[in-house]
Amino acid sequence: MNIKKTLALTLTLALAVGTASACNTTPEETSASGSDDTQPTQVTNATEQTTATTEATENTKEVPKVFEYVEFATKEVADEGNEGSLMVWGWNKEGVDLISKYSDVKFKKNVSSGPAAYPGLLDRALASGENAPDLFFFGPEYAKKYLNTDSVIPLNDIGISYDEFMDDSYDYVVRTGTDRDGVVKGLSWQGCPCGVFYNKQVAQEVLGVSEPEDVAPYFKDWDAFTETARKVKEASGGQVRIVSGTDDVWRFFLNNRSQGWIVDGQLNIDPVMEDYINFAKILTGENLTFNTTQWSGDWADNMSNHKVLAYFGSMQMLNYSMGFNDGKNKTSGEWAIVDAPSPSYLGGTWIAATKYCDMKASSAQIIRDLCINKTNLADMADGGEFVNSKSVMQTKASDDSFGSDILGGQNPLPVLIRAAESLNLASVQEEDETVNAAWIAAVSSYCAGDVDSIAEAERQFKATVEDLGIITPAE
Image (cartoon, rainbow, N blue to C red; front, side, top):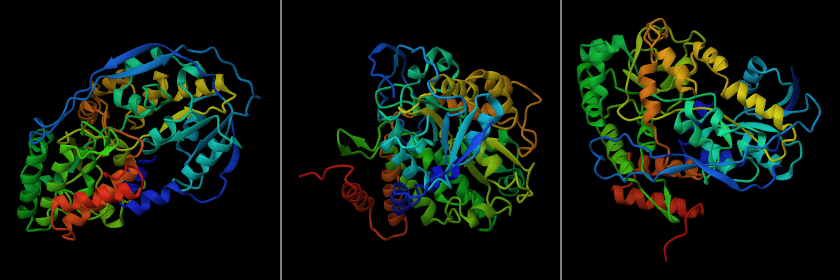
């Protein structure tokens, strides 16, 4: 599970930069039971994305351009190496354990000591080819970094056709696995769309209602959220807040931009991010959160002490990051889910083949077993996973017996499917993690009063991005 890494890496610029230069250790190897250049033969699945927006930004956002998936001729492949020699790399055991559970392919695994070391180790292996993996796992924050290079080969080059997965996949999941030219190189078994998980007991105390249909209007858009935040604080005498910290919700703005940070080589601040900096200032200035840092101890404590109404996140966060799986959080059954004011996602793991892969047939089989096989995906869904299969998710969503014990038996899938279907990732770029961290630093300075204006915060942001060499200073 990499959702902690996904947001934690964006909290400070130093952390984002530090992650890029990992230590020089080598992952432990254990055992478990280059592509030819081609020309595209067709352009497939041209999709025009729609963007869920708040009323405040609805008239200022540009419609994203049509996005085209580019497909090559699917190759006939075979394994050139010995059985059992297929090497898989990951930063934790989640992915390799799934291979062991759902695939009969024999493989070796290199699991690094954690997410901080993993990128550096992988970078060196892909650059040199020494002990390089056939397959490797990566999170969305590193997708464009790796996929926009020739170190990772198209799925077509290991014998996987788009027809095998495209129609049943959520577009944002597939798009994350593409390079800048629209060539699909990686797939995921996961979809991690988000909703608002709220505590029903707290809702009854501060809002006077507790059922999802009654609570949903309080989160219908960001204006409603702000008014709800004020109501929660006032009704509780300052003892309860709507969310634990401002950074709980910032990616719900980030993931609804029409354009990325860099446009034609210049820094671009989307109107949605202008909305966010004003929104963050209101939350901070009026003391409408506890100002915790996401993934911190205080943030986690507020999940079980009835001091916070809601947490924004995916099923991965609910199941693995809120303390229910290890019994630390005793509030299981008190929670429910409603739609977030705007769609977002949190987490996810993708898998792709490298140019050093000499076990293409077996590599393709692993990807099929994890990411395409509906029987396996349905089993994952039964275990609480939101999987990247529209048909599986729709089946579970319409099943009256399917629900989450944490949510008191409520079926979260109708809410999460709506988010998954409306997500647009046209703005995702290779430099995002570093630029995101610079933006958060600038917003934090403004909210803390270290800079006097939004204009000054944006100048600070631009100067930082220029210093990093991501854009060229204007003459």
